Image (cartoon, rainbow, N blue to C red; front, top):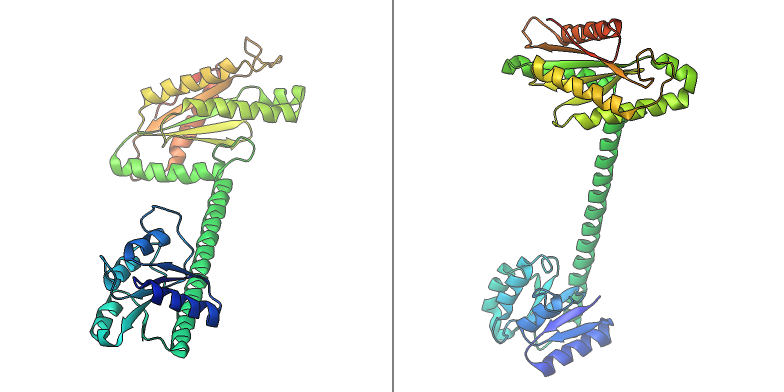
Amino acid sequence: MPILVVDDDKDLARLLALRLQGVGGYEVCLAHSAQEAFERLGLLATETSANIDLVLMDVKLPGIDGIEACRQLKSHPLGQDIPVIIITGHDDQENLEAAFDAGAMDYVTKPFDNVSLMARVRSALRLKREIDTRRQREQELLELTHQLEAANEQLRQLSSLDELTGVANRRQFEMTIRQEFRRAMRNKSSLSVIMIDIDNFKAYNDIYGHQAGDDCLRQVAKALSSVLKRPNDLLARYGGEEFVVILPETGSKGARSLAESLRRAVEILKIPHRYASQSGLQVTISLGVSTLVPQRDEDPTKLIAAADQALYQSKRAGRNRVTGAGI
């Protein structure tokens, strides 16, 4: 475990390094000022930081003294976990309290006693190992937490999305319509719903097969999604070939205009359908629109039922059209 010795007395620093290397077998590097120590530790970002596990710092250093250097080291993110042992003379005992206040964990006195020196060094390095182990476990726990959060988010998305088309599923629609209905009731604002059905879809499946039918559903869902621009608008697969759109804070005029845009978006796809009942022999959709300013004695079923009835009227009127409900 690398040790940094910081002492402006070069002979004493080398002697201390030899003792640490000879008795403990430690890797030792030297610095002769606080500035040089900060550079070796990477605190000044002037060079690549050394991998240091312990600092032995003399109290009396040129420029920034050892106590202030210790304080700055412990206040830096790169140095806060590195133990510092202060090197002091027998006549510097009054500085020890200040050194401990600055973040030093221990001290050694000059001249050095090998037994005491190595015992304090081993204790400091043991503390550093424990800190590193704790940090590693904290990091592993943090990474595991992030993985769990990501997994939970993925599960949440999977539980709210239609597997085939990638839009919201029926469950998400029912949850959202209740939330938006309550919000519109509180705000006394308009809430609109658009029910959508792919025209003659059973015939399409019978003619082209279910794989082509699935691809058709995906294309229609993508086209419908491209029309919705507001983050609070929701497109969901209602079931089979039916889709539904929730439009918060949208009046009947705006909802019918957007429904017409949805109709055109699917028409533009020009998906061939040789047994389509309407002209053009391509896949189209029929839409029913309902709008309501919710009252306290009402619930979302009224809004949904009205849009469904309007959709039925579009079907009866020849399909590939938008019909508004009168509620």
